[in-house]
Image 1 (tube, rainbow, N blue to C red):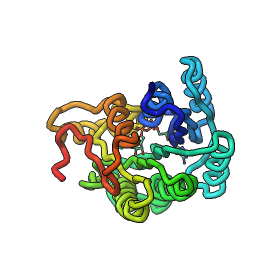
Image 2 (cartoon, rainbow, N blue to C red; image 1 turned 135 degrees about the vertical axis):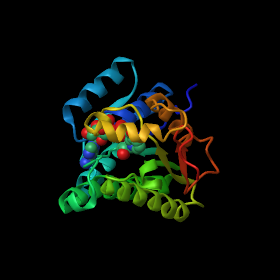
Image 3 (cartoon, protein in one colour; image 1 turned 90 degrees about the vertical axis):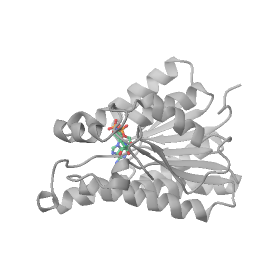
Length: 250
Ligand SMILES: NC(=O)c1ccc[n+]([C@@H]2O[C@H](COP(=O)([O-])OP(=O)(O)OC[C@H]3O[C@@H](n4cnc5c(N)ncnc54)[C@H](O)[C@@H]3O)[C@@H](O)[C@H]2O)c1
């Protein structure tokens, strides 16, 4: 018996990094996983590799900033599989790094906030509807330590992730009595492709602030995330969990 047998999960950003790691673990523990991502090539590659293990997977090219794309893809998942138990929003972008506000363009700021914050809002809004009908659901939004502490040189990222934390707290309370939990997770630096383009000096600065003095692994994030979206995590909502190797102090 798997922890997620007979459950249906949507994972955005499921083609890469943290989203892919969470999707693989959920699928290995019994869930049918529907991966949403804009990167069609990586999305299909990831879906094929999950299928090859004999696990249940669907793939949808979806831009989380598009209200209509999100709505129709979520509806398609529910039409095909008759339920939705879990939604993990891992789609995200870093945007400029090592860039003070004077050099940070308004277009970059809008883009980062659109993907990270508006995407979290739209995914939660459309995923929660079938969960309300079922009176059960687990939602997990990827925030970041940068949203708690405000890494300098990444104002768009920090502001968007603080916003995600606000979403978690507000929506968690809205649905607290309906069998639905809405939580966040605030990792420090995780070894994923997202960091490939981050300025090495910035990465070094972020790692130096972690008392364990190393990057977090995708497996470590997947282990905690899967507990947060499991039935066992029944008295936690509106909370942003820490996974920062000792960096976060609140
Ligand atoms: N890696 C880290 O150090 C770290 C630390 C803290 C928080 N996070 C957060 O974790 C999440 C996942 O990060 P990751 O490291 O796995 O990144 P990643 O770059 O490996 O994966 C992100 C995925 O999101 C997809 N994506 C981007 N924009 C999208 C959009 N508009 N619609 C749909 N999909 C889109 C990308 O195609 C990619 O597959 C992000 O929200 C990130 O901010 C990451």
